[in-house]
Amino acid sequence: MSKIKRFGVSISEDLLKEFDAFINKKGYPTRSKAIEDVFRETLKRESIRTGKKGTGAIILVYDHHKRELVSKLIDIQHNFHNLVICNQHIHLDHYNCMEIIVIKGTYKQMKELADKLQSAKGVKHGSLNIAEAH
Ligand code: NI
Image 1 (cartoon, rainbow, N blue to C red):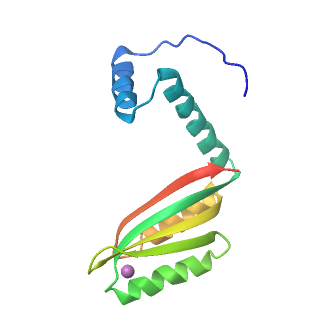
Image 2: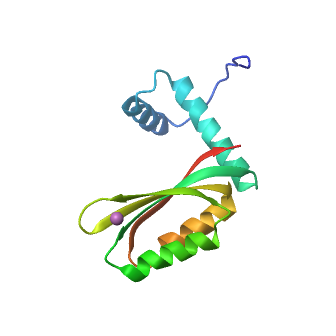
């Protein structure tokens, strides 16, 4: 672990109040820990954006009665087979299915796949969460 360095920050009172309420809600023990996480998250996103590879998960919710949609989602994933690590299918209720697709690649590749899946007609929810850079 590297040496701890202290530094002063000037920030608007309103923004600090909002941030403190946020970290309090999240249960952070200290402001320093919360700020460290913000720094790490920002640097991680930047390294992924600039071409380093990362890992992520796409979450989709859709109506499984739309058979054409199900086969379209499978076709799209096959077109990006080198990105897809695995996927899990959950039958949420009588109509809705959730699919969690674990992927790896550059940010650009992962975003392209997520956009294609999310924009398929009939997808009710779609999100991409980048988990880590490596
Ligand atoms: Ni299902």
